[in-house]
Image 1 (cartoon, rainbow, N blue to C red):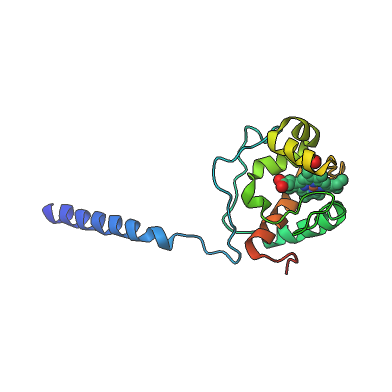
Image 2: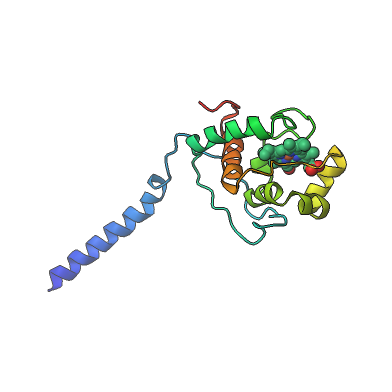
Length: 160
Ligand code: HEC
């Protein structure tokens, strides 16, 4: 029986070593690696105030493509990516703000711009209340968010 124990011990040691060195190998390989926002950013007010939007470390290109089309349709009248327009430039926003804050701004705009300190300061600067499309669904906004993530990951505004 002793050799069985020795074998088990050896296997255990090998496994532990494998796990220790495997940490790096386990890093996901992405076609497009996302730039994730730092943890602990404010979440704002609204349906995502007490929720966590789990983000994949990889950008979902298909979803971003859908988001690009929705962005053209719903947002480009007020936003450019690198320049100030009616609203702020959106480059870097997925790193500067938490995903929950952005989703709350989309889904709960009025309360955000009147009561959230960051959105309030933006309103004072831009003097226009953002008007997201009333007929867009939460899924549409999530796709648009993925498009913004794509921009921040690649520096490109066209998904291809
Ligand atoms: C009527 C113009 C208008 C439309 C349409 C609009 N926005 Fe905005 N957006 C603004 C303004 C103005 C602000 C600054 C906050 C405020 O004053 O409401 C803003 C703020 C933002 C912010 C926060 C920027 C930051 O620096 O934190 C994001 C993100 C954003 N908009 C994304 C979008 C997206 C995505 C859409 C399309 C679904 C959209 N907006 C539609 C005008 C608009």
